[in-house]
Amino acid sequence: MKSLRIVLSTPLLAALALPAQARRGEPADQAVAAEARQSLDGILDLWRAGNYEGVYDRTSVSGRESREAFARKLANASRRPACCWEKMQEVRVTAGSGDAVTIRARFGLDGPGETEYSTRSVRLVREEGGWRVAQADLLALAGAAKKRRHSTRKSVKAGGGR
Image (cartoon, rainbow, N blue to C red; front, side, top):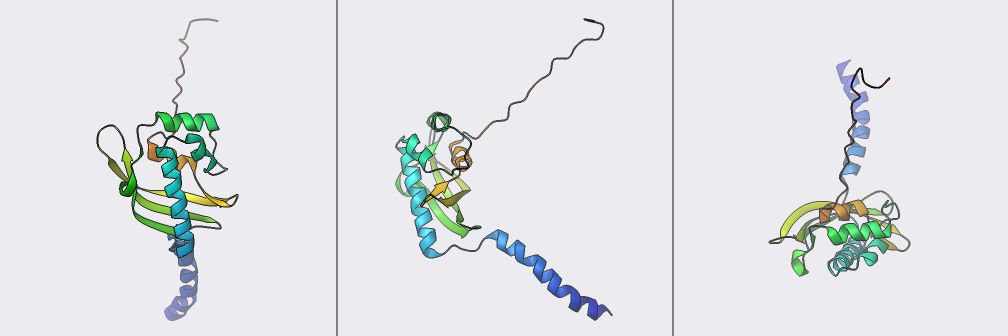
């Protein structure tokens, strides 16, 4: 009876394991990986040069920031991409669902003081004939990610008023 349970449960366990494997992401096709990496490299160059509108034009359509707000956040950010070989190192591109890839890299970021390094994942989606990066990922790299606002309520003292 135990062996029958094992035989019957093995295909079920294998089927459950497949989605977990797919979530980890397989390496992207070399041509796709090179194209996506080159696009991200170009976006980082635009950002470093201060061309925030050009960066905005290469962000994902799903971004919520207006052009002006996005440009203001990048311009006022504490960090920007470093130059040349320091900009992006140890790059790994994995295939996502549909026309999406994730680029995990060690990013060099110039800020106050020395260049600092941050290993992060950035999601790119192929939209309108080119690779576009998620706004939230760029803002996080910049150190300008959305900050939550905490609301405070004033308490009404008992006995006062009506």
